[in-house]
Length: 352
Image (cartoon, rainbow, N blue to C red):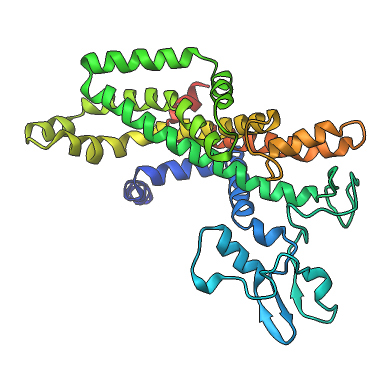
């Protein structure tokens, strides 16, 4: 009786439910997933975690929500109801000085803006500045928090571009076969032969350094592994009986590709995308360190590391925050990728 209940439960939860149950049993994978989720939360709520304006306060008898308004504005909301009220929308207004000590105010965890400069140059970590300050007196913790948004954005958007290209090209090669498969396979092999980082670096020399160009270039050069996985899955699934039946019924090829084959071929592609996000974060940090990525004063883990490297002899403590953040982010995504691969195909784990 118990075995039948377990069998029914396993059948009813579906394929992705079984993958999730296997993934939960992998402690390292879940630890990596926890850090990935933490990065996402820090990136999204960065205006509430590090800002020189209060989240909510009472000023001159009225209630204001400057921190929440900034969160909505930075996340693309442009409606009139999220505009900052005076005087918080004035650049010269200093909330720290204008608010009385008796006024109610909830301040962010780091009460400094990522661009805010102080007179505390190259200060070591303290109660006021948790990770110290850089050569311009800017709070390193605030810049690290806002730099997390850049890393998450670059990782997901660039690999989103790569996934669209890779799935489309690999899917066509696997489904149609013949000379289309031969040409696409040769193109993939040619692109793989180039060292990706140096290829990206060569392209960025001719483009204006910006986060948008970084995401586009990474996406245009990281699609090959996704295309190879998609091609293999399309070839495998195309031989299944339900695809043969769909072809016999005269269902259009486009519907077969996108309705029947594509959803069943995404599992190994997701593994490649997860590893690709880790690689994209590392590439963006390298480009920003070299000056081809996110440009100062905008914070990025790469250019924060560059500033720290320039002040290495005077303030060696500044090197650790960006290095540790890059290491943990890349490690977390790789752990998730390994765990996801084992959950999708348990035979790999048994073989290891």
